[in-house]
Length: 243
Image (cartoon, rainbow, N blue to C red):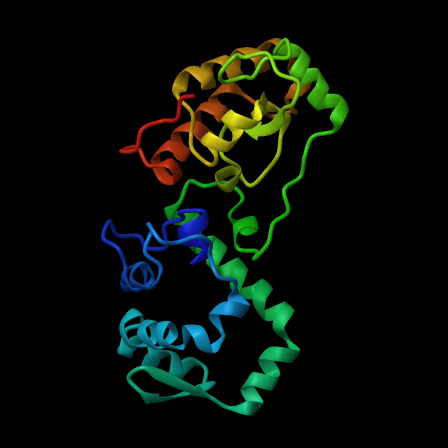
């Protein structure tokens, strides 16, 4: 759920939606969805029906049976449920961190084949705190903008550190992608991708002030990030954001 709703990562190599997506949309309609439940919440009684629907329709029966040949850790009791022994549950609990790391590595390798999103390993973590630039560096960025909002160009005194290419796509905070935005623009832009004119403006800024970019940065890299975000995260059928 987090990978689909928060990061919009593709989890299938085909163009058509997988059954799990359909089931998730039924339980969490886009127009009514306020937030994504955590893993702990999804394991509770409230979402028992959702779990049964995913087991029944989202996982092909032949796949479940085939897995039994590799690791005998569960029994298929009905079409909508599986049964795991207490011994297996205890083992999973005791080795939770190691198993999570191994699973995340396998999932990352698969997702990287069908997505252009950067930092996919970070996306697999339940919570990823946002880092911020130092106040000294951010003041320099504000100065470069003459204390005006990067988007609406109005003079202001309060600014937010705004990721031009949305944080939920890049999952990183680097000066070359940070602009000083007024509170209003920061709130209305949210996690949208801004119009291409702002990318060009950012590229010009970074080109003039090399201290804002690390070794390995290039305009081509930034353009590719923007293009991939437009296609995979923002959606190239959606309008780009403008103040």
